[in-house]
Image (tube, rainbow, N blue to C red; front, side):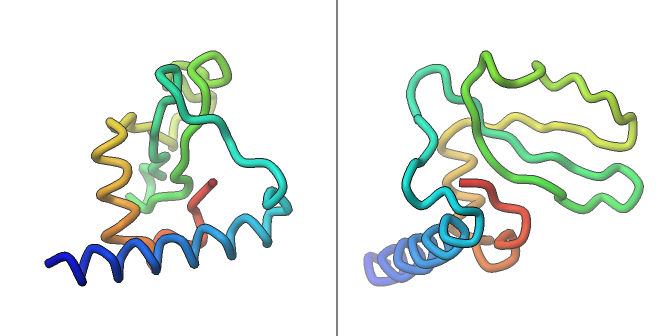
Length: 97
């Protein structure tokens, strides 16, 4: 089990690094503290995840969306980390770091 966890962690770190390089954010990462909120945005038309990320509470719109076809689902840090560790490859296109 420990080997599996290490494997997932390595895959996650590799994808995270690639995403940071692609997005140009490799010099500065987002702050994670008690005011951090984790979320996924779901397109209600096709039930696909269109965004997966986190941000500070004051920078988010409290889940209110201007677009009625998008729903923001807030997650706990543990749920978010488990989702990322299990689905890192599948979420690589929509994962924000």
